Amino acid sequence: MSIVNFWLPILVAGALTFVVGALIWMVMPWHKGDFSKTNDEEGVRAALKGQQPGVYTVPHAMTNADYQSEEMQQKFKDGPQAFITVMPSGLPQMGPKLIRMFLINLGVAALCAYFLTMAPTETYMDTFRLTCTVSWTAYGMAYLQESVWFGRPWSATMKTFLDAMIYGLITGGVFGWLA
Image 1 (cartoon, one colour):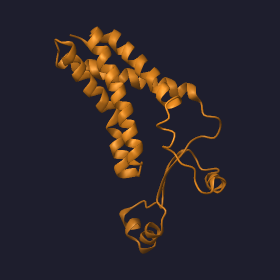
Image 2 (image 1 turned 180 degrees about the horizontal axis):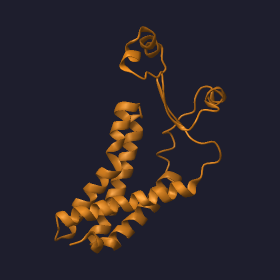
Image 3 (image 1 turned 120 degrees about the horizontal axis):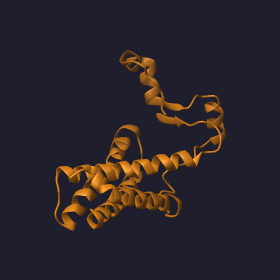
Protein backbone atom coordinates (compact mmCIF):
# COMPACT_ATOMS: atom_id res chain seq x y z
CA MET A 1 0.00 0.00 0.00
CA SER A 2 1.22 3.49 -0.86
CA ILE A 3 1.33 6.51 1.41
CA VAL A 4 -0.98 8.20 -1.12
CA ASN A 5 -3.73 5.80 -0.01
CA PHE A 6 -3.69 7.59 3.36
CA TRP A 7 -4.35 11.09 2.01
CA LEU A 8 -7.65 11.48 3.89
CA PRO A 9 -6.40 10.55 7.38
CA ILE A 10 -3.27 12.65 6.77
CA LEU A 11 -5.38 15.73 5.99
CA VAL A 12 -7.94 15.15 8.75
CA ALA A 13 -5.33 14.37 11.43
CA GLY A 14 -3.22 17.35 10.33
CA ALA A 15 -6.20 19.69 10.48
CA LEU A 16 -7.53 18.40 13.81
CA THR A 17 -4.17 18.53 15.57
CA PHE A 18 -3.68 22.04 14.21
CA VAL A 19 -7.02 23.22 15.60
CA VAL A 20 -6.52 21.48 18.95
CA GLY A 21 -2.98 22.87 19.21
CA ALA A 22 -4.30 26.37 18.59
CA LEU A 23 -6.95 25.89 21.28
CA ILE A 24 -4.39 24.55 23.76
CA TRP A 25 -2.12 27.56 23.31
CA MET A 26 -4.86 30.21 23.08
CA VAL A 27 -7.54 28.94 25.48
CA MET A 28 -6.12 26.41 27.94
CA PRO A 29 -4.26 27.83 30.95
CA TRP A 30 -1.45 25.30 31.36
CA HIS A 31 1.21 27.04 29.22
CA LYS A 32 0.63 30.49 30.75
CA GLY A 33 3.53 30.09 33.21
CA ASP A 34 6.05 28.58 30.77
CA PHE A 35 7.74 31.96 30.18
CA SER A 36 8.80 34.46 32.82
CA LYS A 37 9.55 38.17 32.80
CA THR A 38 13.13 39.26 33.49
CA ASN A 39 13.92 41.37 36.55
CA ASP A 40 14.81 44.36 34.35
CA GLU A 41 12.92 43.98 31.08
CA GLU A 42 13.84 47.42 29.80
CA GLY A 43 17.52 46.86 30.60
CA VAL A 44 17.50 43.52 28.81
CA ARG A 45 15.71 45.06 25.83
CA ALA A 46 18.27 47.87 25.71
CA ALA A 47 21.16 45.38 25.92
CA LEU A 48 19.75 43.33 23.03
CA LYS A 49 18.75 46.32 20.87
CA GLY A 50 20.47 46.05 17.51
CA GLN A 51 21.38 42.38 18.02
CA GLN A 52 20.76 40.40 14.84
CA PRO A 53 18.08 37.69 15.06
CA GLY A 54 19.64 34.41 16.13
CA VAL A 55 20.42 32.16 19.07
CA TYR A 56 23.04 33.33 21.55
CA THR A 57 24.74 31.98 24.67
CA VAL A 58 25.96 33.91 27.69
CA PRO A 59 28.76 33.44 28.53
CA HIS A 60 29.93 32.38 25.09
CA ALA A 61 33.00 30.23 24.49
CA MET A 62 33.85 29.58 20.82
CA THR A 63 36.48 26.91 21.42
CA ASN A 64 37.40 24.39 24.09
CA ALA A 65 40.46 26.54 24.83
CA ASP A 66 38.17 29.54 25.42
CA TYR A 67 36.01 27.41 27.69
CA GLN A 68 39.02 26.25 29.69
CA SER A 69 40.37 29.77 30.27
CA GLU A 70 40.33 31.02 33.83
CA GLU A 71 38.34 34.10 32.83
CA MET A 72 35.60 32.00 31.16
CA GLN A 73 35.45 29.57 34.08
CA GLN A 74 34.89 32.53 36.39
CA LYS A 75 32.09 33.84 34.16
CA PHE A 76 30.35 30.47 34.44
CA LYS A 77 30.81 30.43 38.21
CA ASP A 78 29.55 33.98 38.63
CA GLY A 79 26.58 33.44 36.29
CA PRO A 80 24.12 33.83 34.94
CA GLN A 81 24.13 31.36 32.08
CA ALA A 82 21.58 32.01 29.34
CA PHE A 83 20.40 30.79 25.97
CA ILE A 84 18.80 33.74 24.23
CA THR A 85 16.71 33.67 21.08
CA VAL A 86 16.46 37.06 19.41
CA MET A 87 13.67 37.40 16.89
CA PRO A 88 13.19 40.16 14.33
CA SER A 89 11.70 43.42 15.59
CA GLY A 90 8.11 44.22 14.76
CA LEU A 91 4.77 42.71 15.56
CA PRO A 92 4.85 38.90 15.44
CA GLN A 93 3.64 37.64 12.08
CA MET A 94 1.29 34.81 12.99
CA GLY A 95 0.29 33.82 9.45
CA PRO A 96 3.62 32.27 8.40
CA LYS A 97 4.01 30.57 11.78
CA LEU A 98 0.54 29.05 11.58
CA ILE A 99 1.23 27.80 8.04
CA ARG A 100 4.50 26.19 9.20
CA MET A 101 2.75 24.56 12.14
CA PHE A 102 0.03 23.16 9.88
CA LEU A 103 2.73 21.76 7.57
CA ILE A 104 4.41 20.13 10.58
CA ASN A 105 1.08 18.57 11.57
CA LEU A 106 0.69 17.22 8.03
CA GLY A 107 4.28 15.96 8.12
CA VAL A 108 3.68 14.04 11.36
CA ALA A 109 0.50 12.53 9.91
CA ALA A 110 2.40 11.58 6.74
CA LEU A 111 5.06 9.95 8.93
CA CYS A 112 2.33 7.89 10.58
CA ALA A 113 1.06 6.87 7.13
CA TYR A 114 4.58 5.88 6.13
CA PHE A 115 4.85 3.60 9.16
CA LEU A 116 1.53 2.03 8.18
CA THR A 117 2.93 1.23 4.73
CA MET A 118 5.79 -0.65 6.40
CA ALA A 119 3.73 -2.35 9.08
CA PRO A 120 0.17 -2.74 7.77
CA THR A 121 -2.46 -3.10 10.49
CA GLU A 122 -5.78 -4.90 10.35
CA THR A 123 -7.75 -3.58 13.32
CA TYR A 124 -8.71 -0.16 14.63
CA MET A 125 -6.70 -0.71 17.82
CA ASP A 126 -3.55 -1.80 15.97
CA THR A 127 -3.74 1.25 13.71
CA PHE A 128 -4.56 3.51 16.66
CA ARG A 129 -1.69 2.18 18.76
CA LEU A 130 0.92 2.51 15.99
CA THR A 131 -0.07 5.98 14.80
CA CYS A 132 -0.68 7.30 18.33
CA THR A 133 2.81 6.17 19.36
CA VAL A 134 4.53 7.56 16.27
CA SER A 135 2.79 10.93 16.47
CA TRP A 136 3.26 11.27 20.26
CA THR A 137 6.97 10.56 19.77
CA ALA A 138 7.23 13.06 16.91
CA TYR A 139 5.45 15.82 18.82
CA GLY A 140 7.04 15.30 22.22
CA MET A 141 10.46 13.71 22.43
CA ALA A 142 12.64 16.59 21.24
CA TYR A 143 11.64 18.67 24.25
CA LEU A 144 13.56 16.31 26.53
CA GLN A 145 16.78 17.57 24.94
CA GLU A 146 15.67 21.16 25.53
CA SER A 147 15.38 20.46 29.25
CA VAL A 148 18.61 18.48 29.47
CA TRP A 149 20.86 20.82 27.50
CA PHE A 150 19.25 24.25 27.47
CA GLY A 151 17.58 24.60 30.86
CA ARG A 152 13.99 24.48 29.67
CA PRO A 153 11.97 23.92 32.85
CA TRP A 154 10.93 20.28 33.25
CA SER A 155 7.43 21.47 34.13
CA ALA A 156 7.14 23.06 30.67
CA THR A 157 8.45 19.88 29.06
CA MET A 158 5.90 17.76 30.90
CA LYS A 159 3.08 20.05 29.78
CA THR A 160 4.35 19.76 26.23
CA PHE A 161 4.31 15.96 26.67
CA LEU A 162 0.65 16.29 27.64
CA ASP A 163 0.04 18.29 24.45
CA ALA A 164 1.88 15.62 22.46
CA MET A 165 -0.25 12.89 24.03
CA ILE A 166 -3.43 14.76 23.06
CA TYR A 167 -2.12 15.16 19.48
CA GLY A 168 -1.17 11.47 19.46
CA LEU A 169 -4.62 10.38 20.62
CA ILE A 170 -6.26 12.54 17.96
CA THR A 171 -3.95 11.25 15.23
CA GLY A 172 -4.38 7.64 16.36
CA GLY A 173 -8.16 8.04 16.45
CA VAL A 174 -8.32 9.58 13.00
CA PHE A 175 -6.09 6.90 11.45
CA GLY A 176 -7.96 4.12 13.24
CA TRP A 177 -11.22 5.51 11.89
CA LEU A 178 -10.19 6.43 8.31
CA ALA A 179 -7.21 4.23 7.40
